[in-house]
Length: 116
Image (cartoon, rainbow, N blue to C red; front, side):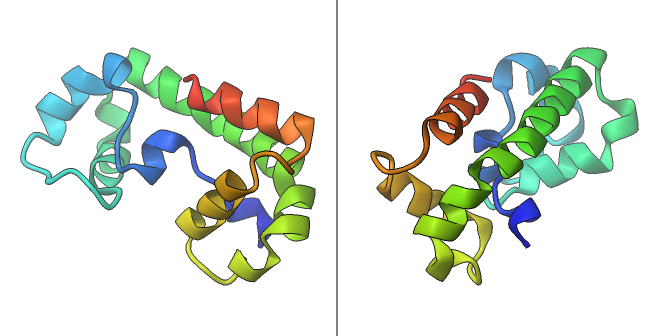
């Protein structure tokens, strides 16, 4: 359950790194209404057709996310147990509300991921 708790910022916002994927969004997802993860889903549907730059950026984010899930799992269990039954955004909001209490490795991992 903890393994699917967090998403990269762009997935949570229904956005992707604009600098890397803007041409792909314009090409494949131009008619998709932003929000609710719709653009991310559109890009996933077109994944084989995406530019190398966009694919590489999304793969790097997924790799960092996998590390972050393990790094932050103890903090999620300790601080956000009540949010475990909610959607992923609820867990992220919980972690954000406890910024001063999360472990240093989790905090660094979140900052690193958000910097993508």
